Image (cartoon, rainbow, N blue to C red):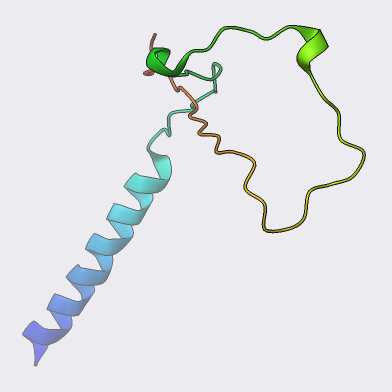
Length: 78
């Protein structure tokens, strides 16, 4: 019976030690440095005259396009 109690005490002590180590470990801070866009999808800019503003919002089911955005996070120390 004493072996079982010792096992539980060691288990709790080990878990507590792991939690303390995780809590004290430094966490890297990642700061966004901008947006990287794929170069194969690059398009030439359009002239300001070809921009059209709409008076009202399109209806709910209309698909206007798809935008993918990825944040670039440099490796710590760079």
